[in-house]
Length: 162
Image (cartoon, rainbow, N blue to C red; front, top):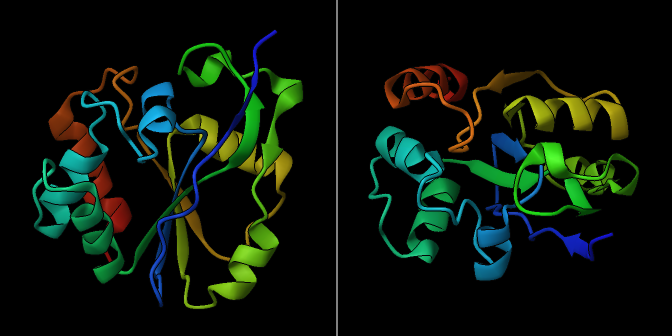
């Protein structure tokens, strides 16, 4: 059995419009305390391309850019047990969701949720119940998702439009 892992605090500004939900931060992200810390993960490259910032800018600047574009980032799981970083390695019975009721009540400007991959959507629906707003699933930005970058970017462009 592995030790209990705890997720990161959300990236959220004053008036978020979109919430991007991943499943659980990778081992690299947890070690650095930064979302999408694996340099092979396409998240920062995609959001930087869509919102006009460099994927290699300082983390605080990338966070600020997302907030300026009214995008929040969080994960479905507050805690879990997992060996490695793959979503498929999370021990199903160990999953504890974040407090979405409070988050949604606090951030009433949210208009939609974009799930970063299938695991995030599946676990949200299983653990947290129905969403109070529209949602859609974008392809995972994880390097384990082998879709071409250009196809991921196109799908994320649609998911974050509007």
